[in-house]
Image (cartoon, rainbow, N blue to C red; front, side, top):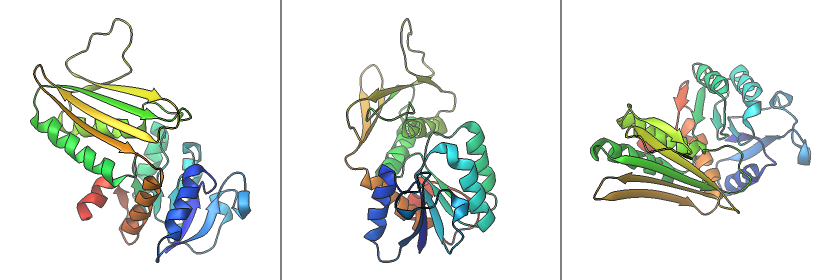
Length: 244
């Protein structure tokens, strides 16, 4: 399987190269980066050779040209970049009508399983308070994290009447119909997500910690394998977990 990596010179791009090099059935056929580092192409349209899939670990600002390129070539794409605007997400959804697109806020299989548990507890634990805490390194730009929002979405799948409160401060008594979402930024934390369900007499806590960013690269490799051969559509980690 020939892979194009968009964002090949970033921290996750380098992790992805290492993950692909460990496989027997995949190879990096081209890399894309605005710096042109190590012979990479400056933009997707500069590469016209063969490819089976693109994996994107770049920046959401490049979503539109990358998606345009994949649609023009009928190329499946795994979008690992987070922080897309509403308009960019709509562009991705529109593209999925003509090509297979895999989009997840978190490429960890473990997080996908946590989201499944969160959905089940939200449905069965009744009228409880729900709080989400996430922690990442001090260089992360977006807050709350895409993964925290993904977990909040899992809660809303079961309890659609709830709304998000992203960062409580001041005179801010907790409302009964809110999901509290709080972000911590410090040091070199790879990623921690904790979902707490509390009543007057008990608490359930579901927690996931990432210890090495390589787990996200490995998840992207699994997603690329999953995506190839699929019909046009928008897929995520739930689909991968279900098929597995």
